[in-house]
Length: 106
Image (tube, rainbow, N blue to C red; front, side):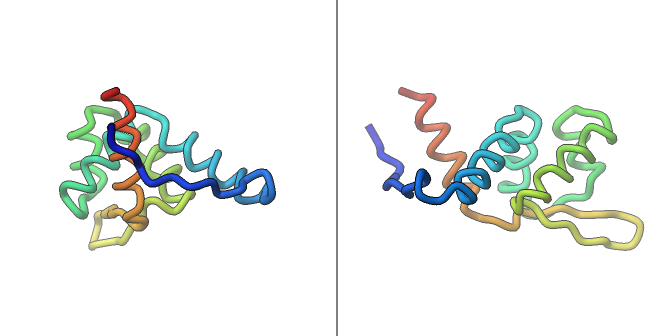
């Protein structure tokens, strides 16, 4: 069984960090958001239209999910003409999804 290299972060001693970790995990824990992250890890950068079409959700739903992921620092966006493109800002999310995926294979 593969380990993810987790070492205690002593979150009981840092309530602010505990809140940030919980918020991040809650935000990532939605199926559409996981698909969006996975898609962007594969494609590097995509406009909103390509994201909502690939994930098969409405534009408004995609915008809400993208905003939530941006708010916790996982994604960043850039305007390119009429389009807004999203990309992964925090590459550690690849490790997070890898570990969680490995945990589901047990």
